[in-house]
Length: 503
Image (cartoon, rainbow, N blue to C red; front, side, top):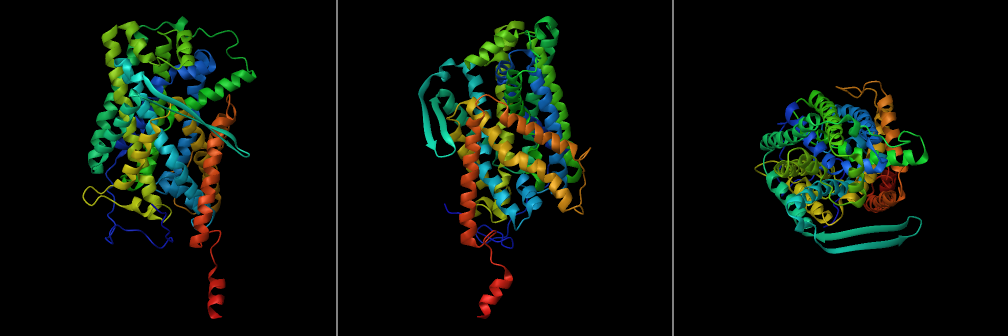
């Protein structure tokens, strides 16, 4: 397949037929549901041991609390941009408009799509891998590994890149989960709305049961038995906090999912901000209650050991087994698998609209602009992202999460948080149905939090190298395309072109 070039005045169509428009069928409740199932997924259930182990005690709750604060700050960035530019593609449109659609913004928006080719399938794969991991609680044979390889590549300046891939029964189950989500999404968006609400019901039942069961058997002494020096502001404390916040960042991400569906949202100027802020507030409260309830039943020392061994990460299953027995552990495991699938479903729905928007702008493969003639959704984009996600199911969950967070912070979130301030300066006249509260403080706080997560971790350069490699290769590909197509920065000015023609 070859990149097709179009100017801003050219829009690809399929088989020379007029392009079908998308349906504005998503209201506040459906948008909030899609965001919440995207945010929750399998993350908080399988990352509890990782985040507690990162800080070595229940003080790991700081990671979730700070994660919620920075998510709300960044959510206000998304709310302002999403309400002002409610189009399919989300960040692609925002970055292009902020930095100039015919100048630097064209490069930055291309880089966003380029990194999305990696980060979106990584995000989808993380949910599928987590679901398969919980399924091994029922079928331990799924954990049997048939292959486990570590690849190393030495690059000048960047250093050594490491890539570990493995194959087990759980790998094939994760791939099957991705395929099933693709099948369910291959339909009209108005049908997707009720499916999202049904999936959310399972998510809320799971978390609600955990909270009620935990507080019914809550032991405050166990939950708040902090180790000596737990809050000493040492170098190790901040390294642990950075690692904990990286995991919390992953757990909270998804509040912006509705922004990628802008063309399909009813009254987007109100619906998008409300869905964003509601989902962050509700999920933040649920996370805090759920994690405190778990720590009040299962000792943090046991949870920490589980996280360090990277096996048996079924804390919620152990939690229910301690309280009610095996039947409850089996039931909650099935419910966690339900929430994980709901996340995969929502992620594929949202991200499949982004390459579609870029293709309409001539900045991606023309095939991605195709809309299903009957159900009117971007089916090529859906199938392509789902296929790449299936390939990423061969990686470990920990590697997928770390790579996903670092790549997206470096090449999307930081540029966008700064960009909302740039847009205020460049386009003060732009209609903004929603304006960020306490501007520009939330954007600045979000940027500070993202930078802290990038640098304050053990072996933080490992994933940063991946982000830099994606950045460098993306710039190189863009420059080659721009030179061939005479786009910025190689475009020929009309004055020069006219002068050359006269001779």
